[in-house]
Image (cartoon, rainbow, N blue to C red):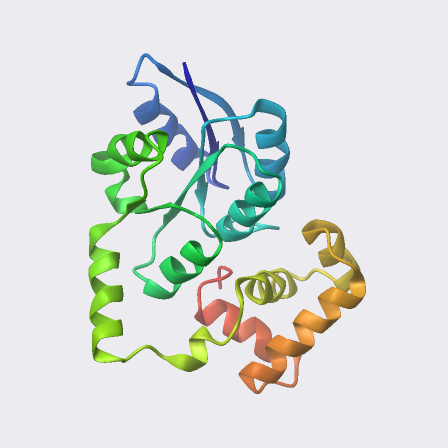
Length: 211
């Protein structure tokens, strides 16, 4: 029996994903999480084969969940779901060690195939996004300013935009306060920003948080 954990902050989405997963008699949903921090805790408790996680999660986004599970050396594959056609997210996912990436709009048709691929230790990425990424690289049109932030810096920016203090962020990301301050300062320097309000606007523009 293959074990699947679902993480999304919307109950209707979790229910829909569960319904698709449970069409397979040899798969079982071992838990549901409503934020990234809970997803990691449940993964440690239930040891799933697959974690399906929404990219735009409170406290810890999907990429941070993938990075945390990788650092914990769990034999768990991560499938990130997103609403946004953003090749930057795919690049960051690959850098975070995530091997599955799927549009929410494609979940009904392709979720089973994506899970099957990951269970076979094969990557699965939405074809449209891969084509866009390849096209942009070939034409050398990637927006370098948007690629400046590391995925860890993006996680810090997301949490700042959600209203967390440096100390709160350090607890969530398991970093020292000094390291959080370093990431925050680095992000602001790279983006040419001088205020928290500018970081919040950046996070909203890049869909790291909801407006």
